[in-house]
Length: 173
Image (cartoon, rainbow, N blue to C red; front, side, top):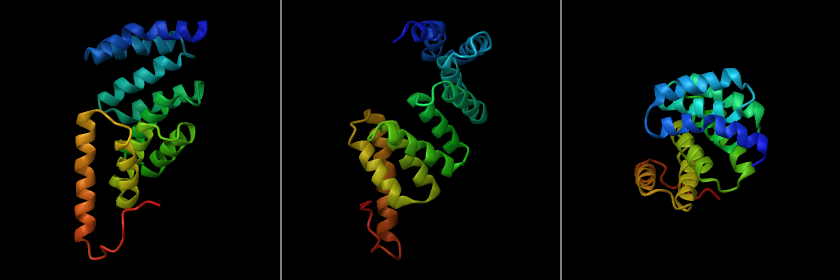
């Protein structure tokens, strides 16, 4: 990490700790101040986006993630946050493009696979969702997330098995 990056990171460390301890309002206040005094601090915008996302304020989160990406175009955390915000706002095509961009940077990025799997599922593209979610499980995610994804996969596979056109397989290749 360069000195410049280290300085920007040091500026947000306390706010990140506040987020980690569940003190989102205090973190939002602190991060907002940092974004005003250090408008080139991508970390401040990213974590402010995370705080807004946790508050279910997806348009505000997206705005922060986009600003972080303007500053650092390949910032994976901001790409994931922006994609998840778009997904939560029902902007599935844009969320999918964000997920594809993530996988273009890191082929089997777990967050990118998860984003694409959930977005395709919500959009009704169950065959594609199955493929991405299965690949996500191969990244050995945390047990709680793996259980949730297993439940989604089971629902997809039961739906396909009982659909009138069950000849359509879930093999994404």
